[in-house]
Image 1: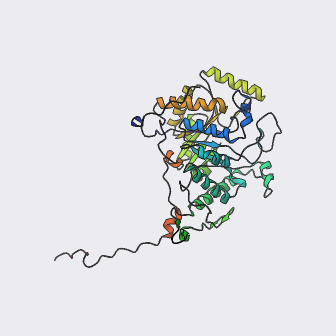
Image 2: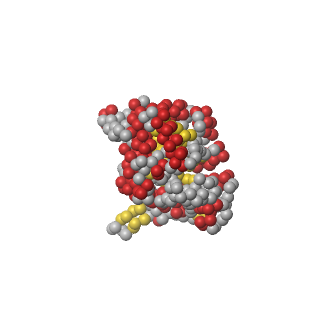
Image 3: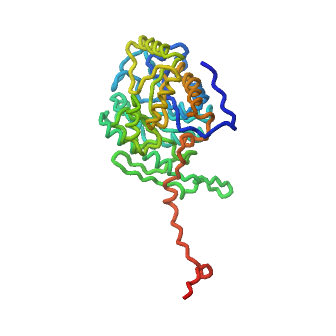
Length: 410
């Protein structure tokens, strides 16, 4: 792959265009046989250095953020139970901990771990993500997912698995609401740290959230001070229209899986209040379309079956992918989360092939223009919802006799 292009001189930099770009990091790549490709380096999959190198590559390409896949069971080709295969990558590191480990090794790119809300307490998630936001100085995000898998429910034993996706998404929406309230439970200036007076915290600026719902009862406040972004952006995937209400209620970034521009347009129309709607694609990139197709066929032969995905599978050149992304952007998508088929090959093809092509077309940044993930996404930093409520209303101004307006003459 060619070297990364040099950023444009500061005098030539323009404001960030509307197109946003992220990559989804998972194992050796999204194709099940990716670990067997040259350069995949499967011996390092469970090392911090492996993940740090992937994030460094993505950051060199000026991407908005990376996501870290996670689950509460071993990967499987089956929808609800382990498949028992030993010829594919099995096992994961914890996504939140990986993001925290690589945060000090990166400077600009957003770090978005996946969390399964179905079996994870919102209090734990709130302080883990607030901590990640502190460690990264404002670059944390949260990707929420649900689980209907029986094997994941069996790890906890608290309840049986549910296939009621409406119920699971309703629970996840409450989960996110609790997390956001806990993030707000410390006001920005709650920490005094005054050695002379011995006051470290202003207790009046820590707030109970008193959340009561059918699924959670959480008093609060958090034990973690409010983080640089206040509320890290929350994202979630809707593989079909059934999850659109969840995204509309919950997400700062909704991920959708259209197959063409018409489906992209329909997804955008279904999410009018979601600030960002990103399209998802699995990509296999090469200098010639035929080479990308041959590589996919070789991987399929190693896997023993044609690769399928909930998202559109693209094979071709970076230039052709740029054409497709811009066509779908015209349908209203604000960005894309790309799933590299083989990380060792397709991630550099994105950062060193696709990104320069998008930049040549004037639709991608030439330098990072914000210090936080919310800033990169054009999202304002929200104030704590409890700060304003905690302040007594100012008394109405009363004019003094000296300042009162003179009576009209008659």
